[in-house]
Image (tube, rainbow, N blue to C red; front, side):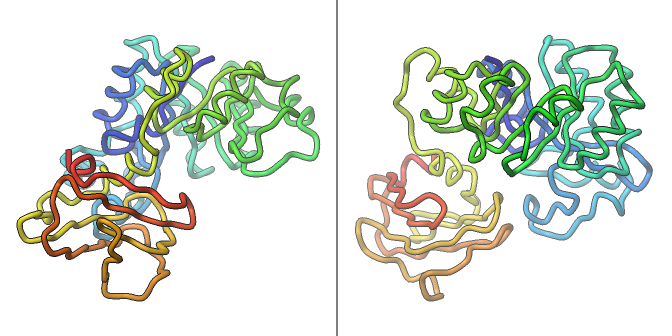
Length: 315
């Protein structure tokens, strides 16, 4: 079973060279990435067309040139071109799942992938019509249907495409006969890994390739995936234990917060619970006498109650 790092891995800024390199260092067989196009027609690697979630201000990739984009940094990292990542992956004999975010970019993305003459790359998308068209235009390339639903008849998809990429919540034993071409996402939990492994899937896409590889080795102990997310959300330059300030920025997606506690005491965040913590929004926690060995707890609708020592998220 192949292990592909989702946007690289959770431990580094998503979709950056640093993130992909870290995934490879952790032992990933490959990575999944996302594509956008600049105003001068260059294909770059980014999940979002607008970078506000990652950089804190509006920056529409489609409305700027590659040169202008190069001046924008995500935690010190540049937005890479698709070509630069594929060069690295090919040199390391790695797989790359190239997700097409915009169907109008099909030809441009396919040409970049095709230029490498390497069978370790394939193109996927929620836009199934574009993938079907891609198979006709580039029969020597491989394509995948990406989806968040239960297909009426999986065998119909199999007739049209090379790989199936179902969201993990819709992945079950109905994929048993198609496991060799199935790549569920995003697989982070042991139960999800076990199901995929038992059915014999081609591969899985995960935020934490090291965790999945440890599951294969029989090592199951790990922190909650949400703890890893919290680590990546800390705004270090605006966080000070001395002043009792912990600052986070939501660089994932909207999260429903039902409560935040420090050592069992509910923290006043300036708004009533529950509330929606929107993507790219900062959350400032002001706590008197906070220390590294105290427990910080978040209760969210998405993850339930997560408790972690302050020290662990500040490492």
